[in-house]
Image (cartoon, rainbow, N blue to C red; front, side, top):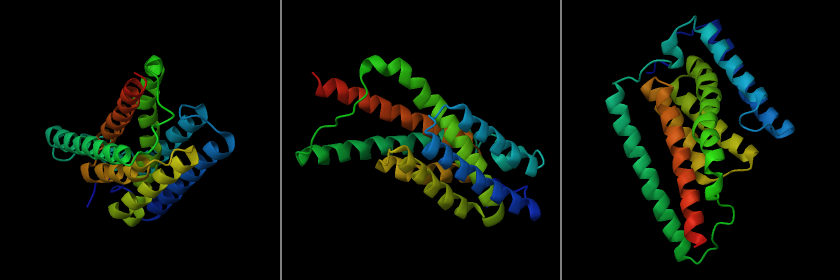
Length: 218
C-alpha cells in the first residue's frame, strides 16, 4: 500500500493515468524533436502543468502527491538514503576497477574542474527538480491511482530509462536509477526522498568526473 495516488479514485484515476501518459509522451517529444535542454521553459511548463493536474484530481490532497514528510520520519529515510548512496559508491568503484583491470580505454568526456561552477546547479538542483516532478509526481501518481504502487515503480523506471536513451546518455546508473527513485517515492510516500537521492547521486557523478579528470590529466 502507498499514499501516492490514494486520494484519486474511479473516473478521476483514469483521468490521472491518461494525464500521466500524456505528460511523458510530450516530454519525450520536446527532447527528441526540439532538443530542449533540461532547464528549458517548455519542460518546466510541462512539469508544472502535469503536477497541477494531479493535484487537482487529488482534490488538493498533498499526501496523494507526496508533498509531505516521509512515512517513518526523516531519520529513517536519511539512513536508508545514506546506505543506498554508499552502495552506489562501492559498486561504482568496483566497476571502475574491473574496467581498468581489462586495459579498457580511459574516459574521453570528463568534466573539467573549471566548469564546476556552471555544472553544479543544473546537475544537483535543476535537473533533479525537473525530472522528479515529471517522472515521479506527474507520472507515478496517475499510474499508482489506477494500477497500484508496484506498477508505478515499473512504469516510472522504464520511462526514466527511455528518457536517458533519448538524451543520448544510456549509462547503467541512468537505466536502473529510475526504478530505485520510484521505489523510494512510493515506499516513503514523499517526493523529497527521491529528490534527495537524485540530487546526491548526480553530485557523486559530478565528483567522479572531476576526480577522474584530475587523476587522468596529472
